[in-house]
Length: 557
Image 1 (tube, rainbow, N blue to C red):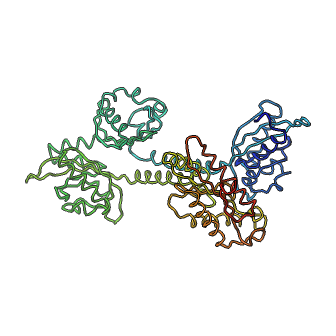
Image 2 (cartoon, helix red, strand yellow):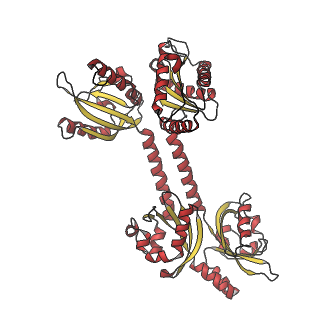
Image 3 (cartoon, rainbow, N blue to C red):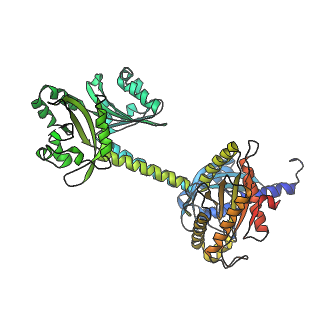
């Protein structure tokens, strides 16, 4: 079949691929003048084809990247290397900076042996912005981790150190440069015989956070550890609690000695009866809560705990009745000035009271900085996840999210043997709209169309995405052709109801859309691309028949 193609057929095929590609493409002369450009490149750079053809590469390249780009051109012309792939910045027609991934090569004309540059351009601006946001978040997180008094380390899945903060360096007695890249069990072999290794295996297998205390014999110190396992990393907060352990030990021997030790601890040490009333509190309460010890004596700690955290703390204490060990709770507590701070408290039953009721020893510290860092990290991760899936201009799903969602829906429909429908739509005469009203108004138009599409497709499972430029796509799971046509007509009518003026349209004085509908029941033999091709053909037919209409693939055959 391929061998029988004529030269004209091959030429037509290349031109179609060039024009329909979602990647920007251009043919340039060896002195950097655009000779041929496709619609995708025009959309990326914000110029019309007429404006871009004849311009020089230097006219649209970011000044800081021009010399860098020209160096690759020189190497290709000198045949040092015939193809290069690199990242660079362009200047959009609006003045904005566009990041792009470039594949550039030299091609030869068969007619006159002339050389030309052929470039393919992928817009990676969203990815670059997400990377920059992640970098800012990581810097903030590292600044926070370096400022806390807790030791913090992070290991990869093989136990190699990937991060060590300043406090951890000091405690372990080694610089981070000695530790990073090394396996913890090789650098500290004694840990394999300790509770640390047992707890590590337990947490790694369950993927659940854990907290525990252990004695580290090589340094003759007690540690309190909080582990946070995940698929990619194993993070550990730890601190030296030897002073606190000594305090607890001495407490059992002498109340007087207990008081002397606790009053010099920066942690707030307190003793409570079985109802939660303070029986004793160390002087650290001044700095942490703003109270004098006498002001807290007889007062119930539950009166100070944030209402939303009360049940969690209460449940943790009740657990001690059945398993006499320690429990660790994180909660908000109210200071004397009314401000809430985050506390982390280790609670232990220390001895029965005079009437046989339990008493509780509590060691508390302010973890507000750590909580703030955790919250900021969570917010950043949520924001990055949102950025990676949302089209910045219209606020609906972007092409990347569409590709991921479409792949999932295709597999699900194939497994359930249910119909899957696609609506591919295009704003009629949008290039003329941009030429008449300007690109800023064009952006406003795109946003209004996206909002209208959201109103028209109300089912929870439907996915609306910007496919590229003025093209949009809607995924309709578990929807046959009849249902898809109903939704498509609703969308077309909803756009008309917006009455967005379009004086350059040959169809209507207002903005309209053309829609192509395709439906398949996916099977293993079919490619997901087939449904998109069918929808694209139906859209083409809708335009051919006069635009502002819905055409299904079956009807367009």
